[in-house]
Length: 428
Image 1 (cartoon, rainbow, N blue to C red):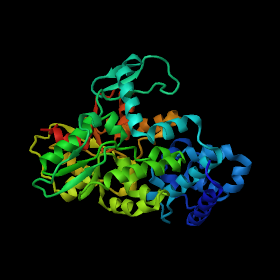
Image 2: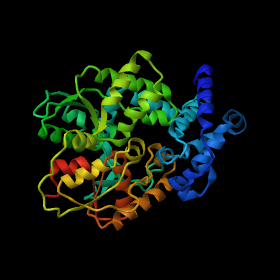
Image 3: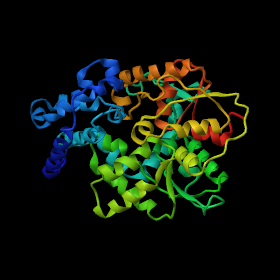
């Protein structure tokens, strides 16, 4: 349970931030959840009105408040379109921390966040065991997408088509690295993130291949931990602080010019949430601020810093692009991934609503799968209607969601990270 002093501080911060909302309803026009349900309590304006009297609401209907707060993708679309500039994501994350302080973490979340995520070595070991035995419980359904489904009826998995754990995670393929700057004169740190490490290690390998090709040195420390966003989104600030501190201490040991990631969610967490939401060891705050200045998405680094040259290709593969919410809404990165697709020699075709949420939202997909699927199905239809052969994006979590949607629709398309297209010269 959170201490009373910390809860009081969070309540005060909420009150100070809530006054900026003009109740104009602009968020209503862009919220993907409201777009499906039409419920005022599902849109940002309704949630902020609820939070305006949070202390009283917690006394009268704490369960109801908690339920409404968690019916949110945390996609940031409302914040990026708010004419008043209200820091809505900060408000929601602090409100969730208050509710977790009031209710406490569930036993399952305690086991996941404080037992596994906060212990990277144990987490890696258990995921390694899971990859060896997952074939007993899953079966392949789409070779092109690499998706599988459950062999048996499973309440949590339901009818999902999912990517299984990699046979060998990235941290086993490349345990660590500290190579000098090459012809570019630059060196970067590479933060891998959990999904790339354990499900899509080939994305991490593509990053390293491209950096090597471009003459960029790499600092890749061993024993990296989760960026902390799953814990923070569940109101577990204690685990979030522990994970941030763990990662910061790893990266301050390196000497590099930039820190890059190939995960939109990790990039936004490192740049936006580590500096604003970390409340742990104050001696680390300077290091967090300095690291934030160096952090960027891999496409940003390649396009804006390295000025990557196009690969010669015949453009015989048509590719469309989905903007991850955390890259577009939080960081404003939209042109660079598209430039990478074209630099890979692909024929690029814009789809309708490229910047709308795919419906993943991390734990939202688990708790509200039916709603997540409706949002994702609309995204899949737009992808298929584009006429492209390949869907590219910059977020492994989006890849999981879109793979599920396209696989269930038997779309006959594959899903790639933009760095894979450039690394493999897929469109040559």
